[in-house]
Structure formats: structure tokens, C-alpha cells
Figure 1 (cartoon, rainbow, N blue to C red):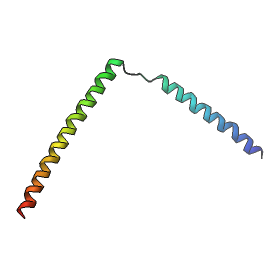
Figure 2: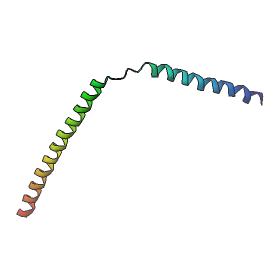
Figure 3: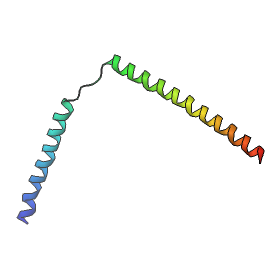
Length: 73
């Protein structure tokens, strides 16, 4: 029974150490500036729009080819 009680404080110490390490790592984070965030957001939106258009173009062209081939047979 004494072994169970001895293990409990070690477990709590491990939890405390984990959160101390977590706090130390969070302090190391460097957040982007507002300008960097806006530029990166604009880049993501622009690339998403271009890729959306590209995928739509491929879809339309594929549909036309499939319709043309299906009308032949």
C-alpha cells in the first residue's frame, strides 16, 4: 500500500514538469505580425482561387471529351 502512495507524488511531479515544459515552449513562439498575416492570407486565398479555376477548367474539358466520345458510340 505504501508503494501506491509513493507512486502518486511521482506522477504529480511528472504532470507538473510537463506543464512547466509546455509553458517554456509556448514562450518561445514568435507570432507573425499583422502585415505578415495579411500577406499570407492573401496568398492562400489567391492560390485557392487559381486552383479552383484550374480544377473547374479540367472538369469542363473532361466533360466535353466524355460527351463527344459518348455521342460517337
